[in-house]
Length: 155
Image (cartoon, rainbow, N blue to C red; front, side, top):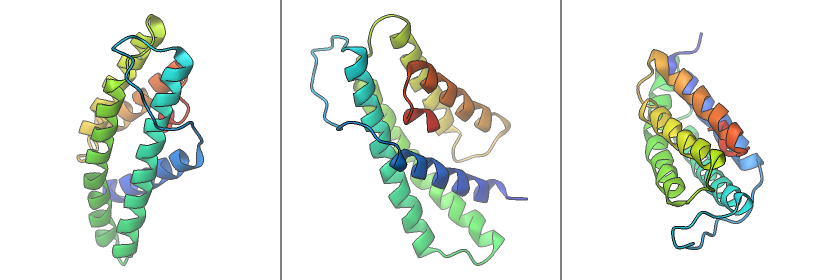
């Protein structure tokens, strides 16, 4: 049975790989004067942020794996904790960028804001495994799918 730490490293690796494999548009964002953008523009910006985050996370997981080859289950747990600690600021940066996007009005925008809040909850629980951590992550996945954000839905 995988320990909590090793399980987190494994999940972070899968998330990073899925994000890198998925495609999206460019990551440029222009100021829209605080006005809601079209659904297509909004989705393109959010997915670009998620892709960039996935690429950063993939590099970090590879870096940790290269620096600390697994030699024992205790070592694997330590490495998983390192990965979780490294992931938190990466995902916090993602959240900050996502909060800068003015989503479309209506149900899509409401669902987007709910998703960002769910990601915030999941990120807060990333370092300390607790019973609600997995539920928070699954909730964030479902909310991203409701908004139509495929790349973001694997976070």
